[in-house]
Image 1 (cartoon, helix red, strand yellow):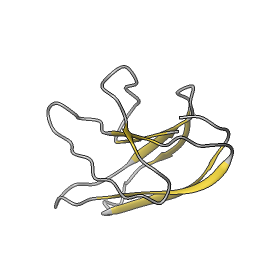
Image 2 (image 1 turned 30 degrees about the vertical axis):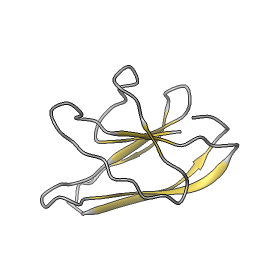
Image 3 (image 1 turned 60 degrees about the vertical axis):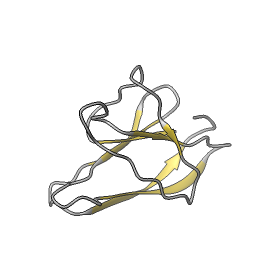
Length: 96
């Protein structure tokens, strides 16, 4: 499954940083990487909790989660300007 901070998927750009369930991993937003992506390899259907934290003052995190075919399965916005956003997500099947 692929989690992406901010807007829409950019599957053709760069690669997603691998992340394991339970692992914390920092990403950076800059001119070369305006849409950081992370990928987990789910062995099958399972529930996971995704959290995105602002580690830079003034950053308002948001994220989307996509299935292996690129279909959005979760879209977490941040209209209340929180520094942490999270969601419990049911991953529907195995895949990256």
